[in-house]
Structure formats: structure tokens, C-alpha cells
Image 1 (tube, one colour):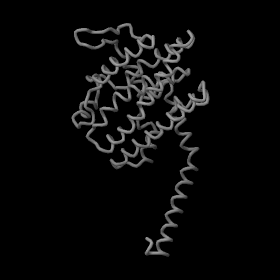
Image 2 (cartoon, helix red, strand yellow; image 1 turned 180 degrees about the horizontal axis):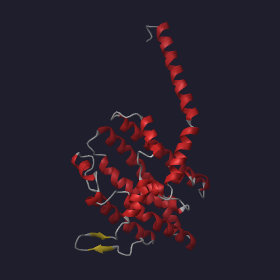
Image 3 (tube, helix red, strand yellow; image 1 turned 120 degrees about the vertical axis):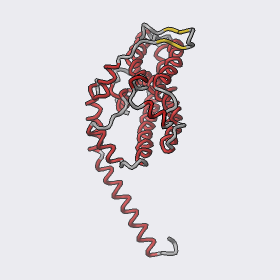
Image 4 (cartoon, one colour; image 1 turned 180 degrees about the vertical axis):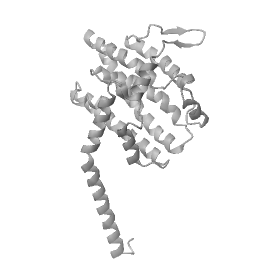
Length: 273
């Protein structure tokens, strides 16, 4: 939410603003779905939020990169949400029910987000040279972080094998990454944009694209909290949580009042209860 919310007030048209608002609202809902799923494992939401604010809990490395232009909204929708869908469609069939059911709705909404992002990139790529350059710059900056979203390579992933054994995941990090590259390269070609990878080429024998090495030092630095926007993102989250305390208190007070009223009504009229 934070990278994109930064552009709501700067969207180039009312239509763009409405679409981006809807997307940010969806993403807030996704967080709620997943917190609800995680609560079924016995940890309260308050505990999970506290772990996030303290830095104990990790979140996707992709959210720690800056959004420098409107084209970034397109690149995030097309690449980041596209990578998310590649991961999440598989999770709709995960072995843990609350998680897989949440993913079904999330995937439907992420499909909209990806189309919205690709539409932005298409408009820019078919626009003026300045707009096309803006789209290319966004692609250059978001390509490699999007590939990192699938996690470490299979031979260096501490959790992938266990997740597959438990049937949470059904494909490995490298398999998902390869599928994403093979789907995305033709989309970039249609836009007239260049993937920023000098080693990218079609491998006829394997029927897939070969691509360059990912900078895993960058990935692990971002995960460790040393990315371009890590401290900014967490601080914004803490600030929003603190400033929203009165809303949570008011909602709790209202819920308590309603519960007390229902209890009073049921005592006064037991037959209605």
C-alpha cells in the first residue's frame, strides 16, 4: 500500500486516481484476510502487528523500493502484482484451508491490479518519447526486485523444501520464477520495451528463457532491513498505527455499547431473545 498510496494525490487523471484508490483499498483488505488466516494458528493480531513494528516479523522485500514516477504504478501492477499472482495461484490449492481460501479472493483482485498496471505501461509506451522513456526506466528499476519476490534460489532457500513437503507450496521458487520470466518477456516485447538483462535469451533446447544472475546480496540486504526504504516504510506504519488508535478505541467502545444494549434488551424481553 505505501509505495502506491504515495501517488494517489498525483495521479494524472480522475480515472487513474479512482482506480488507484480501489487498488489500495483492495491491498488493505488482503492484509486483513491474511491476518485473519494467521490468527487461526493461535497468534493474536495485536501480537503480529507488534512483531511487524519491532522488526521481528518480515514482509515482502518488494515494498522497500521507492516509487519515483507515475510509471512505477504501472510497473508495480504489471510486474510486482504479476509475480504475486504467479505465487498465489498455486497457494489457492495449499493444504491449509484458511490460507488457501483467502488466496482465492486475493488472486481475483490481483488479476485486476495486474491489468491496471499493464494498461498504464501500454499508454506510456505508446505515448511520447518522454513517456516511453519513463516506462522503460520503471521497468529497469522493478525487473530485478520482481524476480527476487519468488525468494532465494532453490539451493539456498531454508523454507521452500519444507513448504512443499507440507503441500503449502506446489512449485519451487526457481520454477515459479522461470514461469514468470517466460510469461513476461513477450509482454514487454509487445510494449516495445527492453528487459534490462544482457543475458536474456530464448533457449530452444529447453523451451524457456535463460536469464542473468540475480544480485542476492541486494535481496538479503533488503530482507535484513537495509533496503532503500525499509526504515521509512516501518516508521510510516508505526505512525499510522499510533494516529489510528482513537479509531480502534472508538470502534471497541461502540461494539461494547451495542453488546450491552443487546444484553439489556434480551433480559427485558426474554421471548424475543
